[in-house]
Image (cartoon, rainbow, N blue to C red):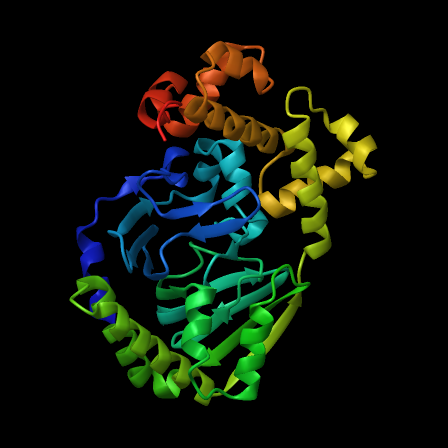
Length: 366
């Protein structure tokens, strides 16, 4: 398994900047949305994390598309505070505990396995430290974040969509305990997150052999690899089911998520003249509480969320209408066109006009 990390030596290394912390929507399949969902469209992926000597390196291998690659060097924490924009500082610095991915839930059933070292995760308000040859299986509802500067480590993540996982598992003879996890994981909008933890120290060679073969098929994509991947996914599932594991349940932020949905609906309707004070009266919660809900769910501020919603609405109009840029800016709630241009360029690296030329849908086309 350690050979899988040899190619990290040849990756170009970038210094940390705000731009590095945002995935280009056209180049990366990975997106963390403002409602805290880590969305990956490909049905299967195999992610390798390498954390060593201040470097955080990632290679994601997908079932259908080409790899995503990122290699960044973190300065010490004090320097990081100085160079990071506030919104990214809040999003990636988890209080005094270190640098972490933003809180998120997954779009896939995700298996995380530590090949070497240790990985620290925060699951809801509970800290889990995965030691070498330990693993965790997360459902789609478990709110969590991974710390990326905790200790030196080599970690792999195997992701598979719930639909594909269900299809594979329904043909297998699984234990009632594992079936219960799968059933609960399949329930949308449920009130708790479930995950399984494993100590695979005594079976690490056999388990890593499955993972290595799985990765090889995913990477080489030879004729018929989809069926072979399905077979290896079954073997890995059976291997896990036959071992010993702990089934953990954690209370989710479901009530807060419901309130956050109300916040989003309000802002989409009142985006032109939205005020936190008016929203507080309308929804019946204090401004401070609404701010805390937004912060917990997204890692961002109220202003950032409103800005994101306005940009989303502007994008739709740029792509689907022939409205002038000035009219679009006004219609989404900005009076200063120049300010909107700056917000837009900071997010997409291009002006609204350039974006329209690249993405506009002809109104006469069918």
